[in-house]
Image (cartoon, rainbow, N blue to C red):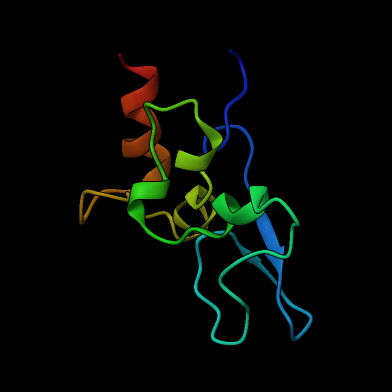
Length: 93
C-alpha cells in the first residue's frame, strides 16, 4: 500500500494540560488507556520502540513513530537517525 502509519502518517495526542505531543512520548498526567466502550483505542496509547516498526503494516505496531520522527532517533539502533537510517531501511530493500 502506498501510505503507512509511521512512514507517511503520524499520530499525535492532546494532553490534559492543553498541549499536543507525538504519540509515543510519555506525559505524566495523561491516562495510559482509552475511554472507548469496546477498548479499540487502547492500541493508540503505546509507548516504546516495539510500537514503531518499518516492516509491519499493522497500525498497532506503528503508533509511536511520531515520537521517533520528531526526535530524529532510530527506534532500535542507538546512534542512528529516523529519517535517513530507519526510513532508509524501508526504501532500500
